[in-house]
Image (cartoon, rainbow, N blue to C red; front, top):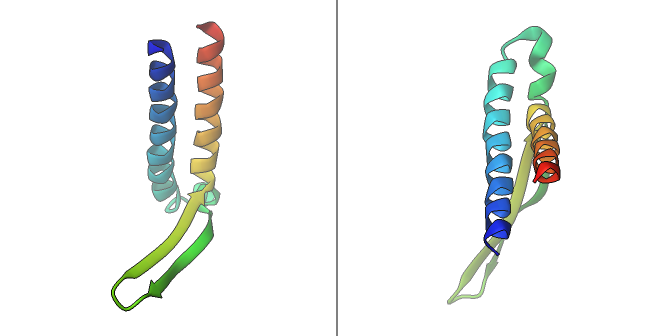
Length: 88
């Protein structure tokens, strides 16, 4: 039970680090001519949709913006997690 929680926390930590570091790398790489391809982004999802029911207003939406640097670091994080799990 405890091992499962630790494994889940490790996976979540690696994913969050990959996303944050990927965003930082993409920001820095956008200013460097030969690394600018790392800052290319793809946006997908649903823009905001609002439903007004007079007494209740609901707004739905989700937009994901992923750069090449984030995608590469996410793959590296998943690979690292699998390698760590293989040793344990």
